Every structure is written in structure tokens, then in C-alpha cells.
Image (cartoon, rainbow, N blue to C red; front, side, top):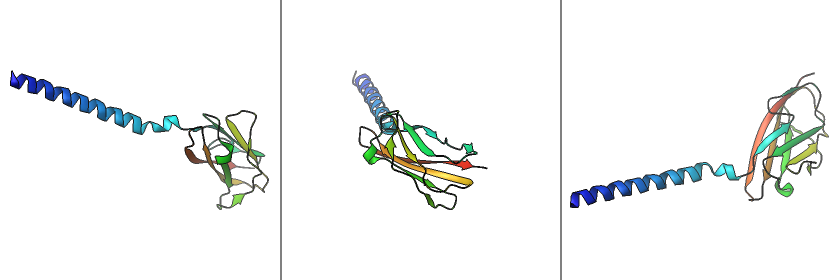
Length: 132
């Protein structure tokens, strides 16, 4: 009987340990699900456009906190292109900034930063190309 109880207890404790390890892995690796994230952009990621953009607009999974948000536009030479004041767009899950600087053909990088209701700041970047 003692051997049998020990085997059952050992099996039960391994099972519990495995469940706990799995639970910790799921909760720690999927934490990004609970944070805001970019869902759409204009110009779009890797898009080739033929006219200079007048505005950079970003959409997120949840309403972005404007005071914690920013957009930077950089040209191929890594020089910043001037943007106007960042503002909330008509869609509450979107922000936009007018392009006020000079834009000539080339590849551009949009770097962005924002936060959602949880206060967790997220960052990202993507590129698009302007061809005449």
C-alpha cells in the first residue's frame, strides 16, 4: 500500500507542477495580448506610394493615450521629416499627424509610441516607399 500511495502522490504532484508551469508560461508569454497594439496605418507598412503623404495616421486595438503618444517620420538618410501636432483622429482608436516637412522619393520609416488604458508604453516602426 505504501508504494501505491507514494506513486499516486508523486504522479499527482508532477501533474500539478506541470499545470502550474504551463499556466505561468501562458500568462507570461501572452501578456502582450492585454496591451495596446497597432492594427492599421496610412501609409501602410511596406506600401509603395506615388504621392507624398499629407498625413501619417495610425490605428490601435484600443484608444491610445494622446499624452503618451508620438509619431516620428524619418527619410532614407535617417533625417527627421517635420510633422505637425499629433491629434486624435475621427476614430477614437486612431491618431494622426500632418506631414509639414519636405518629402522626396525614397524609403521612409514611421516610428511610433503610445499607450492604452493600462499605461504600458509600446513602441514600433514600419517603412513605406515613395516613388514618383
